[in-house]
Image (cartoon, rainbow, N blue to C red; front, top):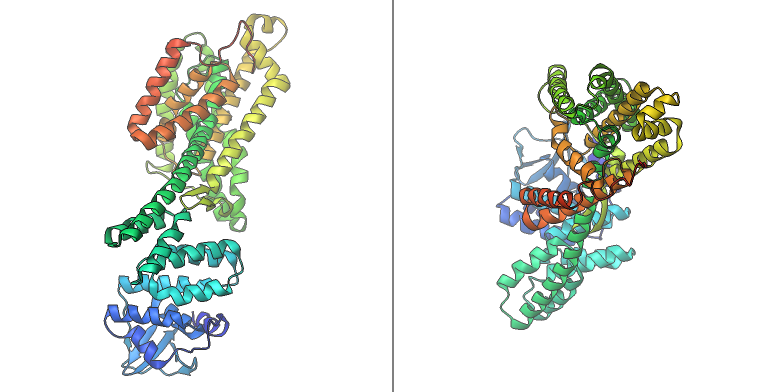
Length: 523
C-alpha cells in the first residue's frame, strides 16, 4: 500500500501548475461535511498529482491529523501530503473519518481525475461516472479535459456532461443552451436529469426546450428498449432451443415423453460445476478455460445417464406413453434427491470465465452481456452439429430409418435397439449441453430443469413433432414474444398469454406449425 502512494505521487499525470497547499488539504480533511465537499470541488478545479494521492488516501481512511499537521499513513509509515517526504507520525494523531456522503464525493472526484488518463477506456468510464452526477463546480475540470481530448466519441460525451452541468446555472442563456444540447443524448441518466430540472425550471422558453429534449431522449431510449427486448428474446430463445433440441430427438423423433429431461439438464450443469472445482483446485492458472473442458464432460455425463435410463427402463415401455410418463417422472424425482444428497439442497455457484464477464455497450440503456452472446453462438453451433449428424452421418441415417419404419429398418439389418439407445443418449447429451449453458447465467440447483421442461415441450409441439427447423422457429418466436409481452404486461401475464396463444395454434394445427408431410420424417 505504501508503494502505491509513492507511485501515485510520482506518476499521476499533472493537470496544472497549481500544487496542493496545507490549507487546501486541511479543508478537505477537517470540518463539516458540506465544507469538505465544497473543498473537493475547489481542489478539482486545480488538481495535481498530490491532490489525487490525497483524495485516494482520504477514501482509504489513511489520513491522520495532529493540530495543523496532516499525515498519510500506510503500513505504519507517514508521508507529508504536501511535500511527499517521509515524516514521523505523532502519537496523538487522530484518524480522519469520512461519512458515506463524503466517500461518495471522493469516489466521484477520483473518477473525474481519470479524465486525463492515457487509456481511452478509463476516460470514457470517467465520463460515464460524471454523467450520473454532473455538477457546475466541475466545469473547469470538464472544460480542461475537453480542450485536451482528441477522441471524437469522448468529446461528444464530455460535451453532454458539460451541458448537463450547466443545467443548474444561474445564467438563463446557459441553461437554454444546455437544454437544447442534451436532446441528442441517449443516456437514462440524462433523461432523469431533464425530468428533475423541468420541475425546478421557471423560465417558459427554457422549460419548452427541456420538454423537447426530453421527448428526443425518450425516443432514442425507446429504440434501446426495443433492441434490448429483441436481444433478450433471442437469448431466451437460444436457451429454449438448447433445452428443446434434446426433446426433438427423444420426443419428436422417438415419441418418448421423458419427464426426466430437465434432470438430464441438471446433471450437465452439475458436471460443469464439478469441472470448475477441479480446475480451481488443480489448475488455477488455467481456470478461464474450464468451460471448454466442461462442455464434453457435461455432454458425456448426461448421455451416459440417458443411455442407462433407456436400457434400464424406457426400452420396456415403448408404445406405452402413459407408463413412460409416470416412470420418467419418478426417475426425475429420484435424480433430484440423488443430487441433493451428493451436493446439498442449496444452489451452487458456477463462475463465468473472465472472457465471458462484462458486455458490449451499444447504447446508453442497452448492453449486450458476453455470457448471453456466447450462449447464442453456442446454441447455433449445437444446432448445426446436430443437423449435420442427423442428415449426413450413418447414425443419423439409422435414426431416420427407424423413426420412419422400424420393421423395415430391422429387416434391412439395422439393430433398432442399439439405435434407440444411441438416439436417446444423443438427446440426453444435448440436454447436458443445455445445462452447461444455463450454469453460466444463473445458479445451479436440484430444481434447475423444472423451470424449463414445460416450455421445452411447448417448443417441440408448437414447432412440429420431428421437425428440427420447426423447433428453431418456435424457440426463437416464443422467446422474443415472451420478452415483448413481459415489457407490456409483466412476467406472469406474459406466460399466460403465450400459453393461450400456443393452445389456439395447436387447436388450428394439431401437428404444429411445421408438420411432417406424409410418411417423411425429415430432420
